[in-house]
Length: 407
Image (cartoon, rainbow, N blue to C red; front, top):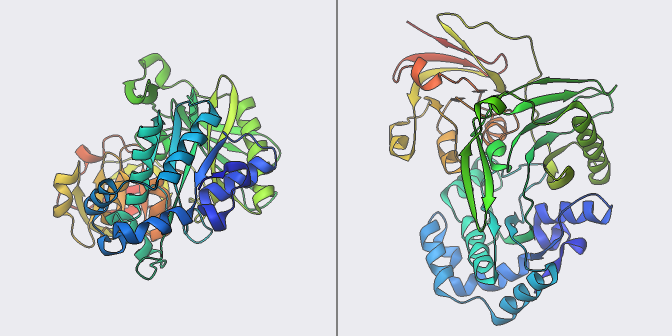
């Protein structure tokens, strides 16, 4: 009923677990764990009526919660945790069509960190199963052309040792030997970077090993305290300090190139460092590379400058969105202007003509999804929601990283 991560393959355990199993077999530093395979979900789905609850995540979750998991699965989960020593674990989705070369599904399904104990793991498995039927996941499958017949999508669940990261981030390896490796990093656990809640440090490592970097403004961090995640402010003196040095960036780059060689192509890799040890937490194909770096753009009275996040230009109405209460105000063709984007906001990206954020980096989930949706994005403009006025006309250039206001 469960599969050791060391033997996991994409066909039985989904894209995320399959890739990590391949890296683990190659001797790369991946936290150990096990997988609840796709067949376990498929066996349970008819009894739970999940096929009839597409787009109704609350109903799907209620159905899952109302039915006990099979006794043999519960027993297997307990034995799997005991074999790991019952540590805190990360419980992460590994859907059948997730982390592929065609579409990443970045942030569209559940990942739950700092889970401890068998009962909490069971709840997290249920949450991952239910997330397959969320509005954002269904919208994403539709936009990326991967909508499947009813009942065909399936969800495996990956359970790994939780890494209490001192620093974490994302790395994009190049598509060729002469390309540049891009790394984004920040203090604490990875959701700060992938969720775009900080503007991370950015590192660019050339083929000759030379490193250039830009230090971000890392105002907050996320850490595990017991079985909970706690967000805290980064002391002012550390916000502008580099989170990794050039030697660490070079070590990450070598590991990234090793992973790309094993998996056969450019990789989008989530990583973490704990007690100076690097761990690879995820590896999937790069589905859409960010715009190339360009010279810095100077802001003017009519132009704001940020980080180019997704190619293209669009002109539309600026719509300031600070949370779910503002969602209904977004109309087709609007430019979404927000502090950062939560994965639950993905349906808005299907409507918006472009996106502007106050924080975040080019390797965040929002930027990846914007590139897959082929809408321009400009990131890391700290004053975006105040400098841009709701209802005014703006032009976004996601390649240059600029926002122009129109009188």
